[in-house]
Length: 289
Length: 92
Image (cartoon, rainbow over all chains, first blue to last red; front, side):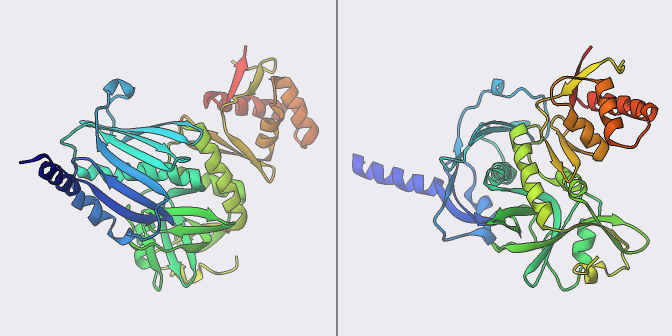
């Protein structure tokens, strides 16, 4: 075999391994380059509804590499994420024994890099890892990911944030005449003074890239009968905040999230919704109260 | 043990915002948000720099119609809970 044919074979082998996906999540066009030994079909399947032809604005690259365990101070924990931020540069770790992943995100240079240490790592870990990077990117761009049910009808959308068991899935199943964006994770963004919500590849029911203007936020609470209580801005922020997914112990990110919430609760009416299963609450989401 | 002679100040590392007279504080250790009503927010806003708790009590008595005894008891209890959550620091 001569040198040139050897190079051709190498290039072909490289193309087999290398994978590039262009996706768009919450209007953020991202190119995902998989230069690692991880399977390429997994990400393709999981991101299918989010393929995009838009010019990528961010590069996420996954590579094999060596990470020293001494970089991470934490004891064993499932998906513990630590974030070190310096301006627009974030460094984050996900430690989930026996796997260890390191990510860096430079939002100014628009680059995110994932390094995974364990060559036998399951590709299942890629989606939560992508989510961790996306959460940071989103926070940096004026948005957040939230534990919430999201419903849309016509041109309006409604959020129902809350912890597991508060009724998010029940609400999504009962509400007739609405599109369900997700009963678990919703992406929220402020773009040009308007608040939009989006479905995500993380437990999104509506796997589609579409923005929905947010009209109201409801905090579900089970009750004998149906009633709505309008919340003041500070009370609404107190209700929303615990459902936002980001590393809370990062002071800089906390401040950004609070500032964004201030802008949201000034524009979007927030209510506590006391509801029973028989109350047909979805017919009253647009009521004046 | 807190007394009215104890000096306290805000923990500078606590992100907070004042909204319509109420306050939102983030406990970055626990990831919780603490919502302070108008009186709580007035106390929080007053804690710029180091303040003696008796000064805080006087400030609240001057601005709200609450008697001195109730204000003193409630302020001590409130500041103790802020202290327990690491939101304020005290100097002896």
